[in-house]
Length: 118
Image 1 (cartoon, rainbow, N blue to C red):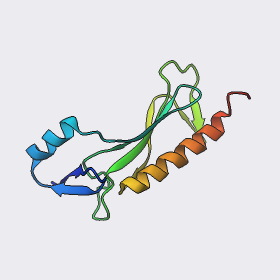
Image 2: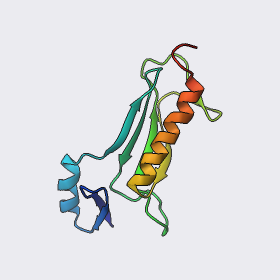
Image 3: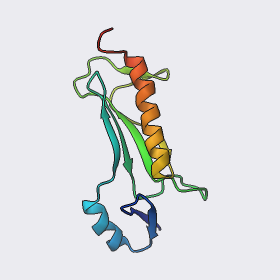
Image 4: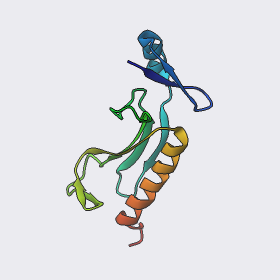
């Protein structure tokens, strides 16, 4: 099984060496972006280090998750679904795709939550 590591320039290195990967993973900064929203919930995009595509296409190594604020009394509605906890919204193959995906997700969710003055 291949494991993946991020280089300082955000390019990806594949390895079969599990111990090398585990040592890297233990201290690696894998956050692409993390944004706190007006209601206290967050959008977080991270490098996973393991392919989540489960196919032979390009590996999906990054994911954006929506983390609902833990004190939420009512669910947050986004794209017609209600969220109470953490939900993975999308996965990507490259750092650049993950950055763009993160920003687009923040914009879409923020538009649904409204501004602090509404």
